[in-house]
Length: 332
Ligand code: ADP
Ligand code: NA
Image (spheres, rainbow, N blue to C red):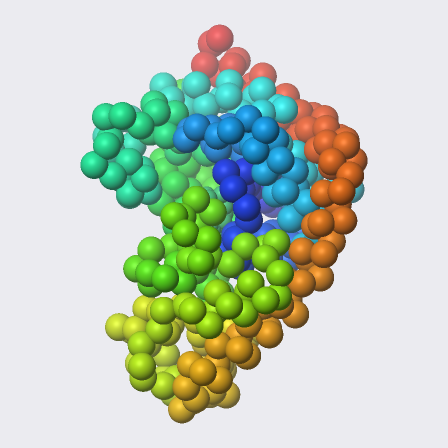
């Protein structure tokens, strides 16, 4: 049996979004306060699967770290570090590249979306990304991974890799990790196109709320968010074919700590002209103090770097015996 341990990460591939906050960071904070040992990573090796400007990558790494801390993750309690500082991630990823099957990678919907029509021209790293993610998780024998809906398939692949490793080497060394995906807004959508998820690397800044956006920008982005003309309905099932409307209602629910049902009960019959400013006020109330604290932390980059370095040292201590045992099992 495995001790309850959480691992999760965010890519430093741009500014943090409201999707990262609701789908990931907010729950990282909740889980850090629970029964789990918690390990949170800035996954810079994942970021470079798509080319990143080196100076911007360094800055984005600090921004993700600042986002974690400003949202309430205590780096003394949780282990907080950046992936490249612990070489075991890359080492275990290689072993998992040799366990995972090409056919499994071919089924990954996120790869298909990201590669688009250009699948021959993307990096080999982007293709192998899910094996690195499995290594991130299993290097610590993590039992639970809080993620947004978009990462569910990758956590399932992590289980497949663990199961195949255990089978091929006649062991029960790796746990079958559970994804933790619960609550509203586990898939926050793009504000301009309700069929796509909100992402750091989207085309236009107007399609996402950044955690560092100021109050006026947040209000403007919600005001210009795409909606349909119908008012707010009374029942969640009436949102089924209204993706933009459902998205705003779910964001409201997640930010206010209630359910979509409760938000509809409160706002039934209201128009978007009233709902959007209320949503913006809520987002500003929630994100404003976090972004103020992020800016304060980012004023002292050397201190963030020291915090990450201390976290990396602790991460190495957890990872080292697991990696050593893996090598022994494989016969390396
Ligand atoms: P991005 O797609 O913004 O680059 P990452 O790939 O770094 O985000 O994902 C970091 C975490 O944030 C993952 O747990 C992911 O599921 C979550 N996440 C990212 N975007 C969203 C979204 N739009 N809605 C909910 N969760 C999200
Ligand atoms: Na993602």
